[in-house]
Image (cartoon, rainbow, N blue to C red):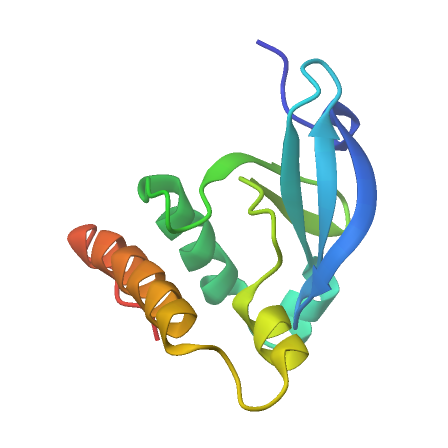
Length: 133
């Protein structure tokens, strides 16, 4: 089996940004399967003393298998970054939908649906003895 490197994937548009880097859509060249690549920049991790946090995230994602939490498919390292290749969740994140909803917000039925999905994800994490803050 070939080692996973950045050349295993085609990189596409940025899906989001965070404190340590950004998330881009990516595609496995050999299969065409789409994922999200979370690229954590080593300089930013070190500057913010986030080494243990980055390692914890990888370890948690390795053990969790849930339809309500993104799952780790691959991980690799470059000279400048740690890269976590995750299942892609189409449809945007909840924050995106909240900001685009406007007033008065979600209808109760839709809010209950999102709350139930969040609780199912938390339940799966807790089943793995993982607490989400």
